[in-house]
Image 1 (cartoon, one colour):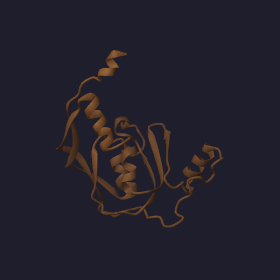
Image 2 (cartoon, rainbow, N blue to C red):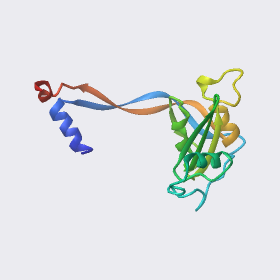
Image 3 (cartoon, rainbow, N blue to C red):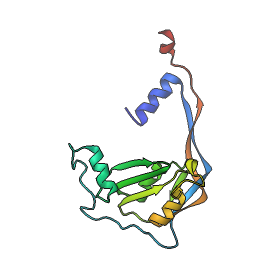
Image 4 (tube, rainbow, N blue to C red):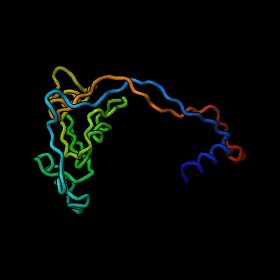
Length: 174
């Protein structure tokens, strides 16, 4: 059950009243850095089929990736070495890597690039960045390794606001 049917059920059973709203929020704009994009789009056969090596040892696959092997299409592999995180993605668009960075803000794509890429990014999360941490933060790694930049901006963000909701009457009787 989805969409209008689910909404009708929620409105009936819980007396749910909602409205949509838009607010301006702090965000980042993803742009191409001044030096240009440093990764190349992949073409047909640029990543392995999703079921490649289906029965293989996952650690062998990760070891091959870390050694520069081709990733599976649609895959995301994360490894950790001390404070450094390595993120390897196969056959993804540029916005596909954003959720894995844990930025805590909306990101708006202003690159105009729709190609798919195999991406490897080595970075230290902001919360673990210290003077003795080896490796760049996600912001610096994006620029140095991929040729992308995150710039602070404001963006409109849609919201669903709950105006009223009641407990389900039948649930109270149980």
